[in-house]
Amino acid sequence: MTVDNLTVYRETYAAVQEVSFSLDAGTDTAIVGPNGAGKSTLVQALLGILPRKTGDVFILGQPLSRQGKLPSQVREQIAYLPQNFLFDRRIPITVEELVGLGWDAPGIRLPWVGARARFHHVRQALARVDAAHLRSQPISNLSGGEMKRVLLSYCLVRPRSLLILDEAPAGLDIQSESEFYQLLYQLKQEQGWAILQVSHDLEMVRRHCDRVLCLNRTLRCQGVPEVALSPENLVAAYGNDRTPYHHSHY
Image 1: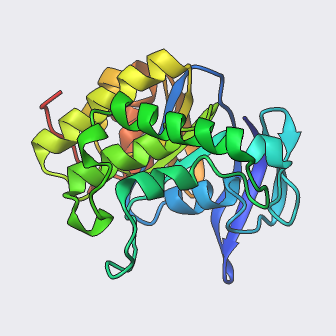
Image 2: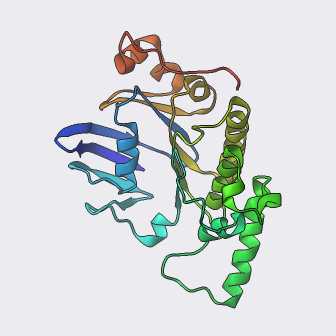
Image 3: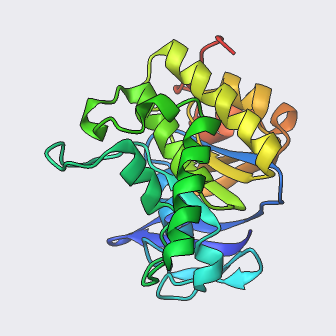
């Protein structure tokens, strides 16, 4: 991914202004910054959910159009885990059915041999995240940690190159969050994913991420964690009166 001079407006103000960075295959980059810094806005613009005012975005070598569109073969290689997965709990859908939606290409009807492959890959993806025992469960019955595992299996059911997370562990207890990250980084090594994630947990970022983007509407700094998370750079990103969140269970 390459982002060049990206500016995104929220109504009448620039929520993200003149941001440039690159993301290499097989690396994990964290976006950090205070509340209201534009982190989620940046992610949504990269996904084409929000329009950009200026700048260019290239994902897997292909340009993101002004209408937020990518070629289908590129979009299929991107997986997104939001902060909250909101759904109507009255919908009678099982874990296996939800993960199967990750296999289905939009607008394509699979022949019988494709349906057999779909069944195999769904079961395999659930097994990879130790969730095979949940496959018949309604998603309304899942705990927060179980739902995160199921969503990771959704990402695994087809080959992906880029995984984008917007505070995906939000709402988990400390143990479940630790297990989520352990699984995530194991899968990153196995799958060769490039990961771009929004995080408030600076201790996790220090331990696991390859690069850091310190954002407060503009990029205040970027680089390896040892450099980007120096006291001086944190003050530049958060200000003197802000203490970034962290915990030390990793």
